Length: 343
Image (cartoon, rainbow, N blue to C red; front, side):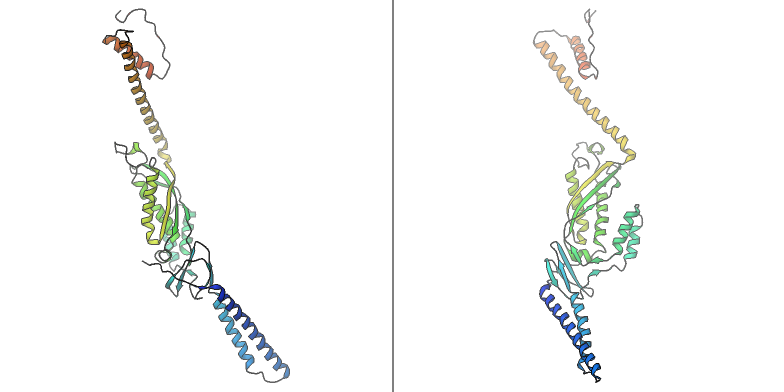
């Protein structure tokens, strides 16, 4: 793996003045050479040797000036320039400012296998737009000026299976930045495409190791992590997975969050009915527990206060009536009993 090395470039302002002086000298030499040749031609005499020498020298100096001009570059805060000389990595300049370096340092890194990589990446991709973007990114060369600023990758919605095998739709947004410019440019073909593909792979992996919700999990204690109930834990797990996968590319992940989570359309209605049934059962259980407590309290208060003397049959009837009233969904209809319980 390539290791990033710090490099320094010369201040660009002194070299700018030198370059301007060379351009001025080039113009002066060219003008003087033309004047000498024109004067000799008007006089009808042989031109001095200095005329052609000045013209040839001005052309050579102009070529040198143009080459020297190619060495200027500037860096803004949050940018770095990777210095590559004839295929050899020299170092990386991180400080912002105006600089001059060897004009033969590469400006971009071409991808000789770009067409083959683009074709292989496009195979099996459902969206033609996405395939075109990936192919274009893989085929194009990378600039040696690398942005170190935080970038946001808003992933597409993916259809995956959770831990229990249920199809779900999930999407994520990832905030990342280049931490090692040498690894980003030399250890992977195209690091933006690498980040996009590894993000999709990591998201599929994380979604497959957790259940969508507790009711889908076999853990009876309901303490396991789920995609819906434990957003922070799932996001941290996704971030760690991305850090591990993107480390070879010199990329560091600042944050990773789920932006979309839902059942797939084909099972969404069935799961909604199941959730409603679970909610109804939980509500009924709560109502019954409360009703039993209230019946017990009512019987004790009536017996202890001497209001009514209950035998076992009367207690059973009273408990039955109170349970019907307390647990029923409709309003209770009073019934007047003109006799007694035993008649």
